[in-house]
View 1: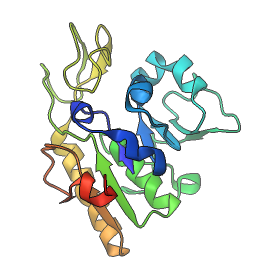
View 2: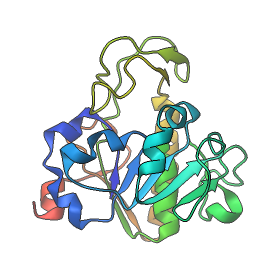
View 3: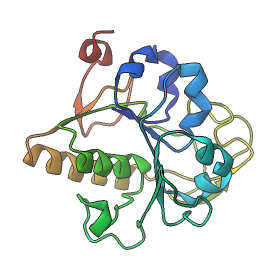
Length: 211
């Protein structure tokens, strides 16, 4: 189960996640109390996100995967692991210890590589709305004024720096992930409510999880 951070999470009853192995991303900690679940794994690779979340990341009681762009901010411990994302050896990395992870222009792609490494035969994604309101160019660093309408919490990047999304390159990464998973007899299902990504097989989370 991969839980992204789109506003569609607010349209779901996530109680069912208590019984699933979930991978949370970036600032998912802002919604844990509201959504009443806790991830088994957590992934953050963007330095801005890590800088803005150091205390919260350190406080999380789950396995944490931190990219080397921000590894100096969150030291390794019994639950925290550093992985290289600067010079990955493959476009889709299957073994983080020897290859690192390819960032793929989205933390979701890193989480998919983690899910593959962990051996999941089926990964269901929720909260990957795949639409953003922003000004400027893809990957440009900008200051967000006012409430954040691109994520499940208005406070997500409000008043802070963030990197504009690159949907074209993200989709390129997603297509690679789908090919790798399906070549190995595995599946990625996009069960995002109203999600606009067209790369993955679609599914209804209520039917998948009987909720």
